[in-house]
Length: 80
Image 1 (cartoon, one colour):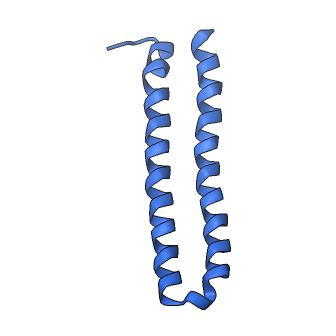
Image 2 (cartoon, helix red, strand yellow):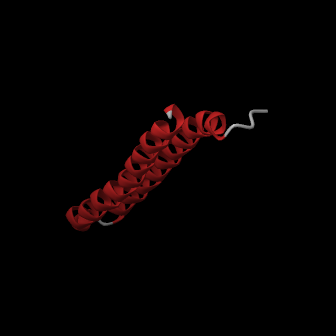
């Protein structure tokens, strides 16, 4: 088991980014599924539902991008 903090960062940073990407994929899938079901129930509200879905998907993606930026910051700490 590595005891140096740089070794621990080298192990955990890619795992954390992968977990964030998987969680984002599940969140996007759930959001799009719910939006499609809502449009199927009320086709006349499709435009409003699509707008809200796109805003929600953008926020989910923003969280993944924050994880990516954090990864780059920690990668800088690993190298020295």
